[in-house]
Structures are given as structure tokens and as C-alpha cells.
Length: 259
Image (cartoon, rainbow, N blue to C red; front, side, top):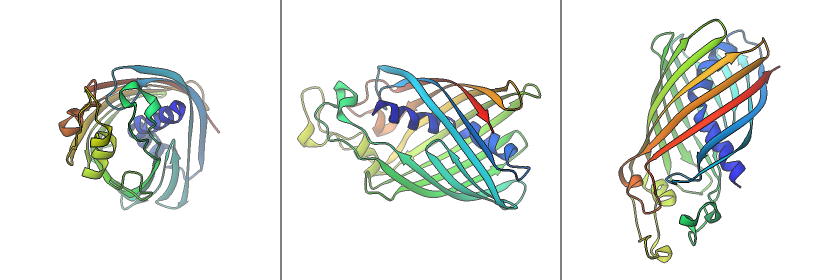
């Protein structure tokens, strides 16, 4: 269970830097496939003050179907991008959010498990300059797991340090609907216990995210990637009795082979 949640966290974590890399990799129109592995250190769940570390797989692929139309897979996300012009890209995104098990933490003991969610929605990206990109997504649960939606508005800045090394800064603001926040941060009256009162959060900003990623190409095929990032829980999400710590740091190191 935790390995699946870890893979989900990794997929989310690498979205910004993967977007920047995929544009460069698919510019030739040739399909790409990268397979590798690494390790991650992350909170046990969103809001936890305890951490877990483990090995994780890293898989990504993309293919340009027709000029300007690219399908891709990045971790637990898949989508179709349509290049309107050299700066604007629109598309559709599918995301899988893994289930949350009450056994993940003592703080969740007695809480109902949350099923895995399949989320679908639009994505828009605007490349302001060759280095600066703006991106927005809105994802709706189509599997009745949380029956809500999330939205993210973010920006990333890519700085080539050399011909083989790229540094990326990314940050964003995340919004959750009432159904979403009550599923992941709420405490139903039936599950209230001493120290964990009933709680019904409203819709609103759930967290800010930020991170720094470094990608270094060892050869034409092998590359190393590292990332230091964090979420900062806000609003009703941060006030949840399930949240032990608002600052949620994450560290990832990985290597991949591009075919």
C-alpha cells in the first residue's frame, strides 16, 4: 500500500520538470521511453509528521501522433497535448490518485478507507519565455472516490547549467472542492474520538507546493534526477485534526535509461 502511495507522490512531484523535459524530447517527433528507479523520502500521508523512505520505479513515455499532438505517460498521469502555437498548449489529463488506508498511520485509525480515484480534466500551458512556463489544470473525480475536483495554477523556471545539466524551479497553488477536502481532511462524527473531533472542511486553497529539480545526463541514454520539494498545507486543510504538521517536505533521487 505505501509503495503505491509513494509512487503517486513521485508522479505528482515530477510533473513540472517532466513537462519541461518532454517538450524538448518530443520536438523531433520521435517516440521516447525512459525506465528507471530511485528512492524517495516523504510524509506517511498528507499532514503527517512522520516519514517513510523506500525504493520506487520511474517510467515515462511520449509519442507525437501528428505534428503538434502528443500523447504521454508520466508516472500515474497520462494525457494528450495539442500545440496551438509555439507558446500555447492545451490538452486533456488523466490522473490516478491511490487509495488511503486507515493503516497508513495511527492518526487515521478508525477512519474509513478512501478508494483509489480516477481524475480527468483539462490542462493549459503557456510558455512565457524559453525558460518560464505557466500551467493550469482542473481534475474531476470520475470514479466516485471523493466525488470532487482539484485545480492547480503553477509556474516553472528552467535554467540550463550546461549542455547536460538542467535546473528547474516549480511552484503552484492548489484548490480542492468541498467533497475533496472532506474526503481527505474531514472527520465524520462517527469517527470522532478524543483528540480527533468531528470536522467538516469547506472548499478552498488546500496547499502551496514548491520544489527544485536537477537533471544531469551521464550519457546519451542514462540520466540522474534529484528533487527537494515541499507542500505547505493551508486553510481548512491545515486546520484538520488529521494534520500533525503543515510543512510537508519531500526528497527524491533517481536514475533512468532512455531507449
